[in-house]
Image 1 (spheres, rainbow, N blue to C red):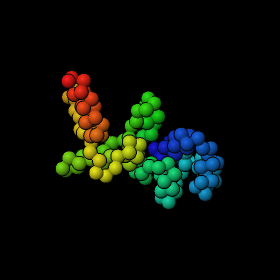
Image 2 (tube, rainbow, N blue to C red):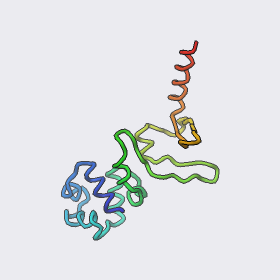
Image 3 (cartoon, rainbow, N blue to C red):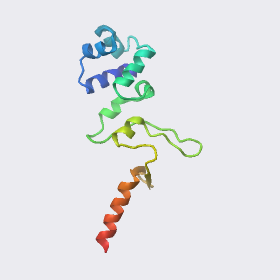
Length: 137
C-alpha cells in the first residue's frame, strides 16, 4: 500500500521520481523500489514523506489513495474515522485544513436515514436557515 501511495502522491504533486528522491536525499532507484514494493522506506523517510505531502503518517501507510483519485472533482474521500466510547470522532487533518475547521468551531450534524450523516459548518447552516426564513416572510 505505501508504495502505491508514494507513487500516487508523487504524481499528484507533479514530481518526477528524481525530484522527489532529491527532496528525500535518496537515489531515484531507491524511490523506484519503494513505488514498486521491492523495498519500503525507513520510518524517518516515511515521516518526511508524510510531512512533504501534508498528511499523517497513518494516512500515508494505511489509506487507499487510489479511491481518492477516483472521486469526482471537488469531492473527497478522507478515509475512515473511529467513533470513540462517548461518540467522539477525529476529523482527519487534511479535511480540517481544506475546510478551515479550527478548534472550537461549531459543526451541525445532519442525518438522512437513507444517505447517512453529514457535517456542515454551523455558521453556514444558520446562514442558509436565515435566508430561507427571510424568503417566507
